[in-house]
Image (cartoon, rainbow, N blue to C red; front, side):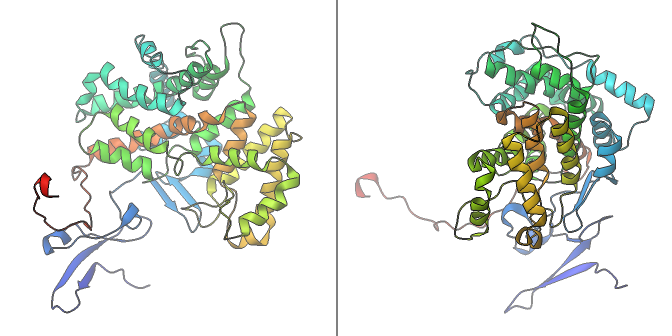
Length: 432
């Protein structure tokens, strides 16, 4: 086996100058060239989107897009989705290990004690228009929590960081559900501590004071899986946003609010919502061939949403789990005959069998199936990204806490390649 290089050498054209840089290795994944000293030599690197830049050390999540691997603290996502509930996965991400039975009971109890929102937060909700997007409400209300819990401005206190994590995990589902209730003009439903995490959210979403609401266990299990599969995904745009804001020492509620804002972007968290909009556009099984032809036409702007993945060059490991869950939900609700779901299943069949899609590895991804599942459960499109944010809060907290605890942490300060004007003199206004 070839020995891994321990350094890289940059040689500059038309110059005798060379720069040696260390090569660092992680426990898994690609080696990285440590360029931190490059600026001393008068150079920086240029990497729009930071696609080839490791911005931090992390022990939380590992992705291998070529092999279709997603590990949290070393555990494959398939095993976590099959054997754990969401709070176990949250404990793993934030604390570093899966809890034992007593630890899980204690952790769950702590979450339950913090699910209610401060009574004055009602006033924050009522300041919005009734047609406000749930994500706009979530960004604002989560950010407003900093005003209700000012003690968390001290981010260097480990005990306060633990309390902040509990408060966020506990309250974000309530905020998300109330964001929905407010837009449809229904009374807020308070959390029920006798229910588990997934059941509690569904109860707050769909219950009314008029009658008793019982959560379907099949739907609760499906929703639990949606949360687990979206809990963390390494250094994506929203996670990097949380880390960048957190690097300034900002309080955790502001950091998570910034992550929600980043996730709201259609290029990031809106994929499952976009998938449903695409299905609505196609409209009927009879039009699938037309749209498949358009998808294969490079000159056509139409793209099939929910197929392929920027990171995974093979099957998204989360998709197989969500596919099974999708069919469980459709069976439970008797929706396989519904025109929209028949259309979705036909598209799935084509993507798994058509040579064009198979050769290009354009398999259905987790967003394709999660969007179908949430629609089947009666969750409106506008709530899809809000639920994504609710799940990803666990990952954001773990990444933020890891960064604050890292002694090498520095405030983020990316460089730029300036392409503007050279120095100019100001001409008096009457002579311009």
